[in-house]
Image (cartoon, rainbow, N blue to C red; front, top):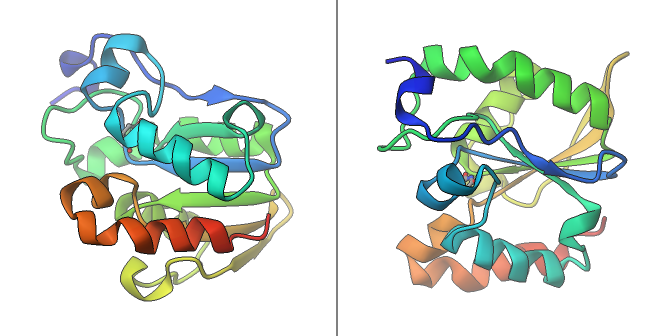
Length: 169
Ligand code: URA
């Protein structure tokens, strides 16, 4: 299905274009679709808490997603990931972050593939640092659990908070 069919607004991303820290999530949910902005729903509220624990201000980072349009089931196909990939590439190249946090499995596997990082499972490697050192990008990539994982599974909340508190960025 074409991505534009299920969206009200595209959600390209927002934040400081000079940000040193960039966050990549999965894709817009219900509220993001209505407002055209990333992470403004319940995951976004928890993300705001996590950013504070990492001593980061939301206005100082750049936040985007792998998928730029709302998918009601939030389960993109490989084709849909591919269709959005050039936008994410351009964003990474324009922002040129020092640190890129991948939120959840899909963001982590997409970035891992783009830069050949072999990042493995998030359950094992959450909070670990992977280095990208190419002509286009020199950055630290850190896989993090998706904030929504703590909403589905409240037992994860403290793990996420510990990971963000431990970030040294
Ligand atoms: N979940 C995401 O992955 N991205 C958003 O923008 C909102 C919720």
